[in-house]
Image (cartoon, rainbow, N blue to C red):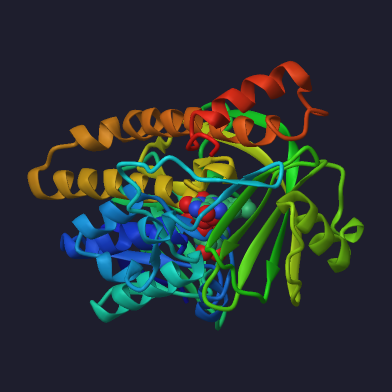
Length: 379
Ligand SMILES: Cc1cc2nc3c(=O)[nH]c(=O)nc-3n(C[C@H](O)[C@H](O)[C@H](O)COP(=O)(O)OP(=O)(O)OC[C@H]3O[C@@H](n4cnc5c(N)ncnc54)[C@H](O)[C@@H]3O)c2cc1C
């Protein structure tokens, strides 16, 4: 028999977006239940991003959640030792006024957000299968799911937060004739590689005629390597030995190889779904947009959406004022497009200034000039 329950907000997805929103709501005394498809062990060990920008770190601190990024290496501390290699020559980034970001592996952030939420009495349900949204354009939506034992549940709520990522189910509840999807394909991909070797310094980026390359820390004994490659490449074309050799070539010096644990080819693209609200469903994070990983802002965008939604729901519940809920989609889309603009600039600058075979020599020269504006003059 179906178990019926009620809450104020059902959050679908226990990733960065969903867990941040849930923690914010919990702090504001708003009832919420998080439904996560995978097991706790799975989400706490899923390797994804590695860097949270200054905006994201600041936002977490402002909400009293600074503890979830404690212990991470700050960008500021690492800055002096984070070279950009242009054709193998070491260049230093111009020091930013606002680089209080942190190298925080996504799985650590997720692990910490889960720990804090559960410690503070939050309702988080793992292994929630067959999540289905009903009545999102009514006053009282219902979210159905099956628990790990197969038992059916129905959660009545005032609002549904669709935070289940790009492949999730929430977005599919928005009628196709309402939802718009705008996409930009950059035309190349990244081979992303997890390696069991430390990254010292924590982040090295390289611009080279053979393509962009990077090595970013993922903790004391792991790093993620990125190599620009054609969209048509598969991981089989990248045996371990080729990965290390190519990284060394693009860095302009040999790199010490180590064990490789995973490889994936990720096309670089930007995607924005609009509107981010339909009825009582609010989309956030990757469920609503993807940003080029070159910008390293996906988690920060997710945090931004979570904050706007938390404030909007709180205003509605405490003051019976729907104004922030009504402006949610517009507010988040405006921010998303601003960050997409910056991400396109950064992605094109870092890729077009290296390998001219995609965009040609004219574009390479322009991108080089843009690149020079970000680094200290050559000594
Ligand atoms: C190569 C690469 C590098 C990146 N590097 C960075 C970086 O350095 N910095 C940065 O800020 N961002 C980076 N990003 C982006 C970042 O990883 C994402 O933007 C971020 O994961 C978005 O979080 P989210 O919570 O919206 O989605 P997700 O992390 O995808 O979380 C969604 C959650 O929903 C769950 N779920 C899915 N379907 C269902 C369902 N049907 N029912 C219930 N639960 C469901 C999933 O299991 C998951 O836990 C990178 C991305 C890539 C591809």
